[in-house]
Image (cartoon, rainbow, N blue to C red; front, side, top):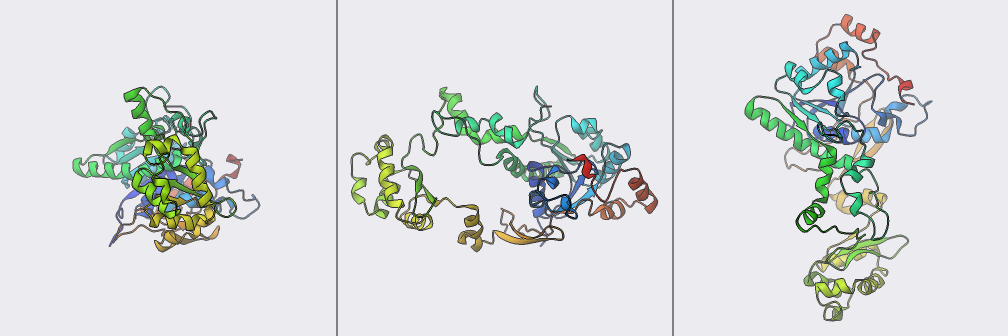
Length: 413
């Protein structure tokens, strides 16, 4: 059977992480995604691999870029030139979806606003995902994943009471915004199919991430209570935290929310008497004596490996999980059993394992069909096959710098 998005053509004007990850997911499920980069305005992820500039086609080898751009084609078009703009509009006239994550005013300045694109394709689903959205007093501010977390409120509730705010270990706003792209596109395509008209979707990365701190927002809105950062603890439940396990720098998480789960923990530790101890017999009592309880638990977890402790606790109905390192995630038996990894072979970057698409449809699962494209790798397909340009016209595009087969490496130092 055809993949869910087979027959849908997406023009991808996104760069770095949030947008490319979202459009990669569209490609994972069958969409034809054409990534457009300018000869002098190429995706800066191509240059973040730490690969010496003396290596042949170094701009095709960066792991960061290749991870976020599989299942895509690549065409080079300079959108700053009138001929490049016209070329893109020709491509959009034959496409279903446009996704861009520029600052709010960039597409308008290029003459590629929704109204101008709709003039050549009234059925276009046009997704804009600037950091602050397309409207509002901060719409034109530059935003990256490293500051979206702060603006969304996430960092203010992270960390430990009395300490400084802590950001996550990576730019959390980027992948969460990327995950929203397939949903936005699916809604846009559904509306288009119902009305026959295209739609402009404004997907603000900041607002998308703000929804991830919803319980804090609701608590403040309803009760005017501002919770202090709680580290790994929970405001009501205990035990709820990270505990040392056997081995160097190994940890396990345990989170008990009711008496039944705590009784299971006591049985696993062979300390059934703790469930009747007045210090720990109720949810409120356990929270009041949390530090004392944590010391007892860690004394037990320290005698087991983190995987072993997790399996013992899970068999007793206790929510628990080993804290896995990246190598452990890659070799984890549960993920391996579910086919969570597949090998990707790239003509320049070599072979490595990548995660498979996250949504497992029974008859039409997504998969990593093709590796990330080399720069301008599919110029011929786009210009000749899709747009039907003759050789003279294509030669003029090259001569005028509207397109190129290699990026201008001086434009990103």
